[in-house]
Length: 56
Image (cartoon, rainbow, N blue to C red; front, side, top):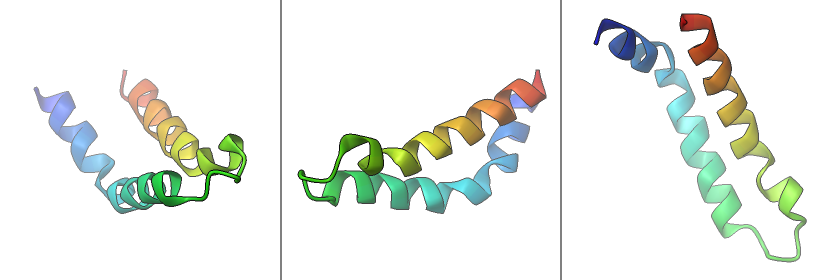
């Protein structure tokens, strides 16, 4: 339980970026390549994955 709370607290700074990345991916034009549309989300996922690995 403590680890989960610590994980959430340590990644709070990433929430606004993740929300923006989601809006960007969903609202971007369809002609934009998928790789570019999802790049911010992929970056956010990579950061969260690294935090999770670091806490183990």
